[in-house]
Image 1 (cartoon, rainbow, N blue to C red):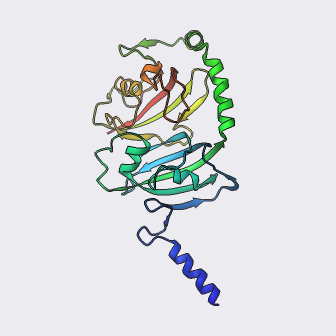
Image 2 (tube, one colour):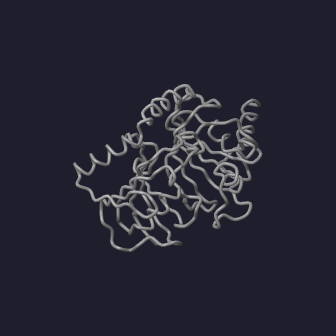
Image 3 (spheres, one colour):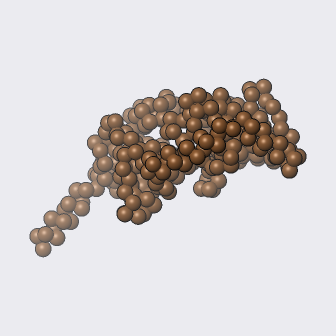
Length: 283
């Protein structure tokens, strides 16, 4: 009986009274495991993970949803988002409470958006979909780099093939990207300051998927003009679009991730990308 009481007391203490239903992961991060996955597939520093991830304010307002692939690093400090991923197994779903300012400044390397208050905690809802070791990821990347040696020629082949089969009207925009109309909208244009909902899918020129929202069936929503959300080419492309419109956008690397590639090593340097964009709703 005494042992049961001790165990019950330990269970009570393990739940954080400051945030009911959450346990402390570090002095700055709290977590709540929502769904168990495969306990045999444990993450280690250096692995690459593919996750469905959702950002929410402390009042539960969603301001980002999407799929991401990231490399796990040794946590730099007690607010590092790497603590969150390293806590998970393949197939797990969890919610993490993390200081918003540290997440934007240290992880995203961007300024904190205006709607986030000083000292506010934000929620990260994460589902771990795939784990790749460093060796597996580099092997996949090397295959792509081998192919990308003929990138310019292959891009022209794709464009010619698309024109021949779809008879598409490719528009060359002054900013330097290519745009193909797939579906017309209602002529209500996207304007700076609008709250917009967007479905997107990003692919390499060889057709390989790397990011998007269609698989989760939930568009991303954000205030258009907030620079922390989009790469410059997508920001510029949306300015040409209206509510209900779908377009294919081909971005040269200078309007995507440039000469360095992305921060996580997923997009190589000097890589052109294809995005499908759908403006679902404007407010």
